[in-house]
Image: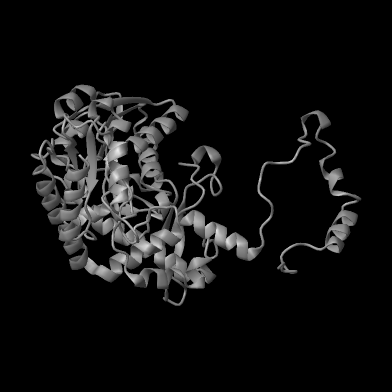
Length: 453
């Protein structure tokens, strides 16, 4: 069954060709030399009608191991957190769902206020003075922080901890290459940045020190100890933080950070097979005008009525190209709204309680898994949030890939294979435990892991 309203009619095609002075569709491609044109038939399936296509797509989607059918212990940047149903209700409203860039404040007050609230929440959590109207994700936000630091200090070196997510480090390196910046990586000790090595690497050429806390291994960095090393050399202190952890941990701003970035995915944003997510970017007042992206500000109109406007727009579309701070061309307004609704729904006490559940359940899981013969928690002496590393028995002949396949058969999405990024960590698995995990799920996961080993 075909729907007449879906395809164009032959008459439509004829009229369009006549309008542009053509007689056939083939003439549209006449400028392409015949020698480079594909003359065969593409190896694709035959066209499907609507009913057949929907059935086919559902079958493909059914192959995904989603959180509805599987219990996930996989984190490494994307987490299975509880998403209150009110979030989808709000963001599905047409005035938010279809909104793009609020260039015309007189008709975009709702969207502008939503972004303003997001900025305000981020400032409260991070302890910083100003936050922008979101970034693409946490990794690009970290790279932009490095670029800001270089421009502010006129220096060309970034000192980057290897405890930062490896994908984020790749993005920082790619951005640095385009800006002719040098990257110096600092190793880890006991799951956190090696302070002695860091002190040796930071010099008067260093523009910024980049730290993630909780870091890629889930461990909490000693930001208070890193701050004097950084500022003593005149560099900027950049911290990438899981915003949910800030419900309990001291804010990076209070510990001396100049720039705080991260990913808002834990705040009501679905995993969605890895993205999109929403990055946040907050700075002290001194660096406000160097921030990438946009800042929504609160003002009053001539009648004294509260209103919202785009206060700062530092991209090349709005100011002279040489003055632009970044080529970031959009923001994640809809996903920033997810985060705002999540924080509004839970409130200050709720955020603290969820963060506490993450800590308590992760530590319970670490204790249970460490009881399995041959399994250890190598960084167990270092404080961690909702992720931790386990080392599998050296006597085990099963690979982590095969192990995760067995766990999947049992209904569990296993941890992240750290050997993928660092050969020295072969046989190590990163486990994530959020508030969504129950004691029964953790206990059963331990049993299935032991059985698979």
